[in-house]
Length: 172
Image (spheres, one colour):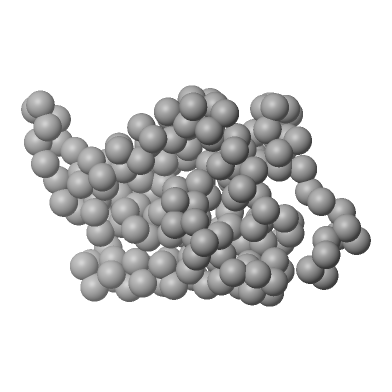
């Protein structure tokens, strides 16, 4: 699926050329994931004798999808997911239900706002999800790919994600 992933990433990056929009996506994706799983960490099931939260159960299918698209990027997301699920679980276990829902609302609100600001203010175009709903699942892959490239890994993806000089953009 490497070729498929690279084609999807190339399409996704066309909507995410501005570095400030990319930064807003890092913040937004982290906030949205943490907010989305926060209430799900309070619901637990016994799976094969192991206590597992609904957050983990619901995250597994998309994690498998990411691993299938690109194992290296998927493993990076798995590591980030473990940290964010741990943070959400710690928050959920230490605050009241009212406070948890308040934190949920704030995280989701700021997460969505950062995505909107990134696209409206910095990219000056609509989010890619409007044209391609499947891009909702590519955001974390894009952010992790950018991180890997910044750390000197995944040079194969660097050409796909390379920024276009501002003066060559026809929309500006």
